[in-house]
Each structure stands twice: as C-alpha cells, then as structure tokens.
Image (cartoon, rainbow, N blue to C red; front, top):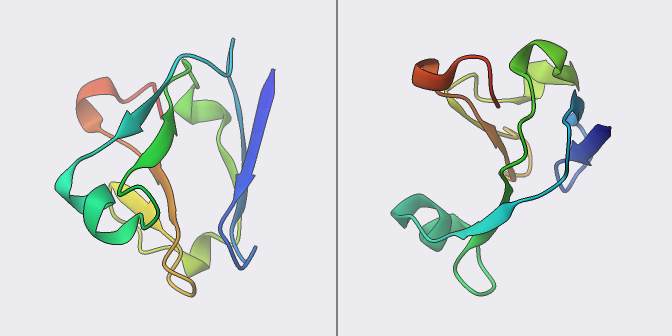
Amino acid sequence: MELQGSCHCEKVKFTVKSHTPVPFMRCYCSICRKIGGGGGYVINIMGQARYDTLKVEGMEHTNGNKRYFCGECGCMLWCYDLEWSEWV
C-alpha cells in the first residue's frame, strides 16, 4: 500500500510504499516532547516502508538531516537511520 503525508504548510509532500500502516507508536523522545506539542509526543508509523520507494515533492524545503523537518513550518516528517538503511 502507499502511505502519503505532508508537513503542515504542505510545501513538502511524500509517499512511501509499505506492506501495512501499522504498527505505530507514540514517540516520547526529548526532540518530540520539545517540538511535538499537544500531548508531548508524535505518532510514528512503524510499518516496513522501504526507503527506496520514498518519493518527495519539495525536498528543498527540508533540513536534509537524518531527521527530516520542513524548513518552512518546522513540522517533523520522517526519520532515516543508516543502521536500517532500507527502511524509513
């Protein structure tokens, strides 16, 4: 299945293929607590989404780090770790 997402201002939009949209978890790391707002956490979809299927529109608006944020609205987008380089 294809999962779709975007930042709040919609300057960054993305799709990624995954075999499932679940399981998911509430991330309560220090970064998410500081910038996630609301309950102090964010929802992370932990489906096995393949990094090589990630398509991004507006990549120039991201910060280009392993944790991707929109440089315009600050919305957290996705995380990439070299240790699990085939997943996103």
